[in-house]
Each structure stands twice: as structure tokens, then as C-alpha cells.
Amino acid sequence: MSRCVPLLLIVATLAGACGGDGGGEDAAASPSPSPSPAGPTPTPTEIPGPEDGVLAILAADGRFSTFLRMLLVEGSERVPMFLGSPVWNNTLFAPTDEAFESLPEGALDYLFSHEPQAEFDLLRVIEHHVVDRVRTIEDLEPGELTTIAGTLEVTIEEDRVMVDGATVIEADVEASNGIVHVVDRVLIPSEVELP
Image 1 (cartoon, helix red, strand yellow):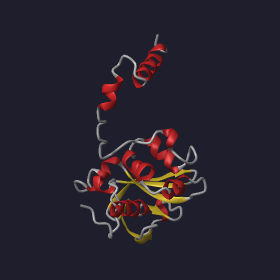
Image 2 (cartoon, helix red, strand yellow):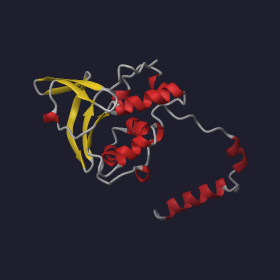
Image 3 (cartoon, helix red, strand yellow):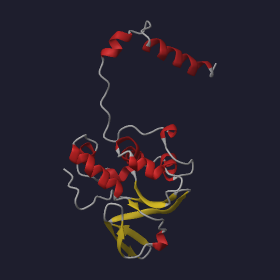
């Protein structure tokens, strides 16, 4: 019986979509709900690159749906290809979903809007999280660290490493095509002005 339930759901869904007794005309006229600021999370089949690559690791973790949306749904076409490459071998500072909650109200809506300046700012924010080579946590030293979009200020206090005021809460998450450091804040370049 448990195998029949999913099949019945699929058949019922298809029947409704094809104008069956489910009132397909009324359903088609109803507007779909607007997406939340976090937006859709890409499914594993939509994750480009190797199965053990940076993007796949972020998707499997479950804490990075907003950042994945930036990278895969809203970002420039070259960014997912860049991160999805099996020979990428760079460093990604990945903010958790909680990190995005500390952004000013309306900032995510702005970054995900289709305004030309917002699209440019979104790309700059993404690139500000990417360092052009693999840097383990032990490789980081106090001072400036160059990203694709500019520089980050690295500070080290005892065992705590911070980049532009964001604390690295999990370091050296290895992937086949790079390394990830999980951070508790979104890294915003100085030239990007959020609402």
C-alpha cells in the first residue's frame, strides 16, 4: 500500500494539471504565492560540479539555502560554472542562513531584485566570498586577504579567526574542488550599499 500512495499522488497531480475533475481552470487562474526572501533551494539534481565539490557539500549540509540561491538561482552564469568546475581549487567563505538574518531589512529583496545595480551588487557580494586559491585556516594570517572582489581584513584572537568581522565558525571543510570556511556573517564589500 505504501508504494501506491506516491503513485496515486503523481496520477492525481497529473490529472489536475491536464484539466481533470479537479477544476484545472480555476487552479490555473489562481496566482502562485510569491517566494520568500530566502527563495527556492536548488535540488541536488540542479547542483553543478562534482558530487564531492564545494556546491554539493553546501547543498548536502542544509545550512546554506540562501547562499546557494545566490550562487545558483540568482547569480551570474559564470559564478556557478566557476564554483562547479572540478578543477576550481579555491577558498569559499560560506555564510549560513542565520548569517543572512543579520542583514538590514530589505537587503535580500534588493539583492534578489532584477534592478541592474542590484544584480551588479549581488555579483560583487558573491565574489567577495571567494579567494583565488586554497587557504586552510592555518594559512590565514592577520592582515589583508585578497578576494575576487577586493580584500578582507583577517584578525586572529587566540583560536578565533575573523574575516571582515565575521567569525569562522567551521573551518577547513574540504571538497574535491576547493575548501570552505563557514562564517556567521555575510561579507559585504565596502562599495556595495545595501538599503
